[in-house]
Image (cartoon, rainbow, N blue to C red; front, top):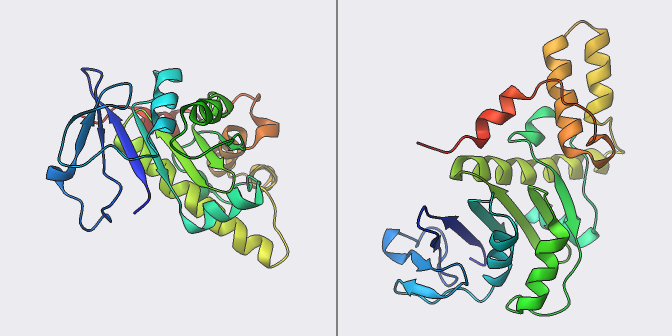
Length: 220
């Protein structure tokens, strides 16, 4: 409940789930088809009130095929704190992508201008923590978006526990230790994680790009 997924189709229309149903109740007959303006074309349910953010994002980002918005516990906690936690381990960054904090809300979720401001603030990032709201995750396939959504929540959950016991070392520091120990593959994977997801390293050249690039291939 209170989560939306939009899936762009080859003809420019979008599939979206309705708001009133929890996932256990949701089935194929409940799918809504809407146009690029968020107007309903077919389906038994009405287009969700919170869909303007999806519409604005897809208009600004033609590369986005799937966008997922929901309110997972740990990611929303960090969104409420207005802080993007670092990845402390490899599995917290499966799917790759960059994460930003978006704090651009000036009105309700169905306000078109507020949605446009939030989408613009997200820029080219693949994921966003929406301050005092939830998350937005994108991908060029269902597989990529799902992987990123799961990994983002895991990243936030692991960070919560790490920081609860006093903190830990970030992925890049662990990568340096692994490289010194001779484990080049593990070091490269961790370094790639840090460079893709930590803002301070985002301009560096990733040493291990092929593994995560596979997740961005459209599903057959």
